[in-house]
Picture 1 (cartoon, rainbow, N blue to C red):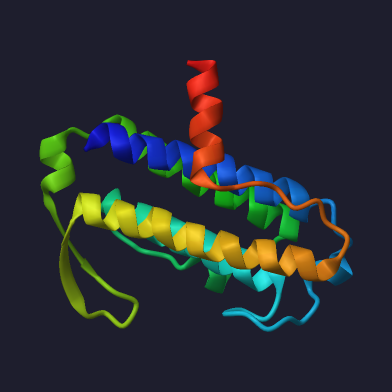
Picture 2 (tube, one colour):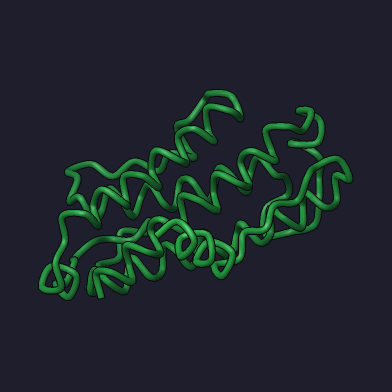
Length: 167
């Protein structure tokens, strides 16, 4: 199980980086252009996706105080993208020190409405990586709508093929 989740952690970093590289080529008015999606702009979608990765990382690390990055962040779009990658790399570092026993352990945590939950760590990680994939797909669609961005190939199979060639 650890090997598979490590692969997903590495894929998450790789795919996020490709999307971020494309988004950073856009003028700011395209980052803030209103579009129909779960979130109204590229900036808002990035903010949500980064915040979600970050809050789950805080929970996994059993942080005393959980802070929703989206509600306190005041930096630039580029800073948000950098912080998103830092959270993704934090998930990878978390994975590096896990074993199958710790991945099967139960994490007790409150949600944003302070309701208690219990979930196996491996299910949380699967959720985080799947959630990011979902919103990266939305970002790809939004990038297409700008008609200015190079659209990256972020399919897992592309990542796997590159890994197989390198290995």
